[in-house]
Image (cartoon, rainbow, N blue to C red; front, side, top):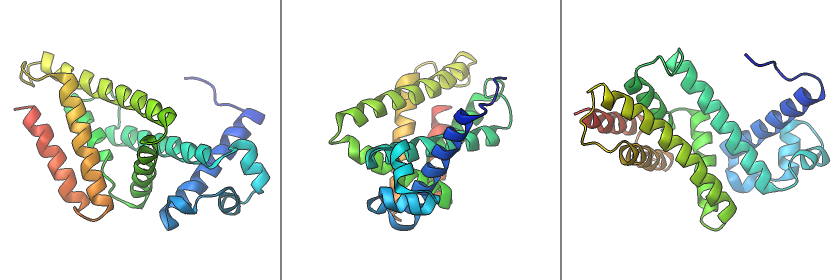
Length: 203
């Protein structure tokens, strides 16, 4: 286990997390357009200059919130799995990861609102689009490896393509997440649809 950062480095990381959390709170209450250096500073209890020292632009604030949301999501996934992911059932891990993409409480709704906003920005910003492609590649690869493990164990038909299946499941979950955010679907219905799709993968 690696050491925790101490001293100035730890304080810097803590301040960045606090500022990112402030962004998430503002998005939860008033949406992404309300995010500004001054609004974030007031919420975080620091000066606007301090916020700008860490994050010079609104774009960087949104990126920080995006990263913070992902970190919190990873923590929730690990807590739900309750053990080393490598030792857990691949199907159980798949279910947790995919359903975590569905907003089901205020915290996850904020995370997905930020994520959807970040994705929308990618349509006009190639730098963000490139980053998202990398993030999706890692996510798809992780899920594909889990699918392949159960395929090798005979639990998933050999005809299934792990890479295509992983991408399809993520796309379904994120599409349903959008439905939940705009109240087209309930979180429970979206979760059931994702789990049904996963069950079909297993035949």
